[in-house]
Image (cartoon, rainbow, N blue to C red; front, side, top):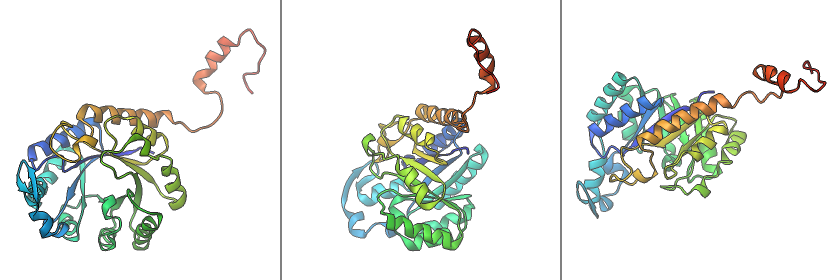
Length: 283
């Protein structure tokens, strides 16, 4: 099965539509299947006390200024929708509140995403599941019981989904990857399992996850890991993204069926190298 590769733009656009478009174009050219964003209603997701607290950023001196600076309006998502259609790549977004999820419906995206932080928000899970779109559910910082409940909601609603193994540290240390959890999730829930990675650069862990049979892979992307933003350091720059997609496609081709027998391409080599020994080529 082909791995569905998602380039997570998230908030790495820093509120700049031109950066967003450059990342969308780069994802398409690298061979990704979709780009993903994040949508929040600032006054719902954060308290007034938090928003009024100090924080230096390119947009001002408060948390509100920073959060609003990173957030695209619904009109800007309309521009993203048009640009992705022109570019020929799917897009969708992970909503962090009910209002955001409802506002995204106007774009008729093919997919939904439940962020790891939102897997415990049952009202949001039910709202997303009611749309009956294929949904990627990240399982970072979650207990078995919390994942069980999310799966129960989606199954009860009849909404197609797949779980994504995820470790919610930003960035993730290699020794915390716990890739064997991919098999554990597959065995427990009998569903497709993806991988949402937050490792610092590098492709090895994502490639290993691919070899373990994931059906989707999501990595954050950026123009420059030195740019402002909390997700930049755990993101792939464009060159790394191209290498990742190329490696994934190569791994898919290399996995084979697992059947134990001589391959047809080996037969003439065997005949040549075994010419001096008695053996039956039909065995």
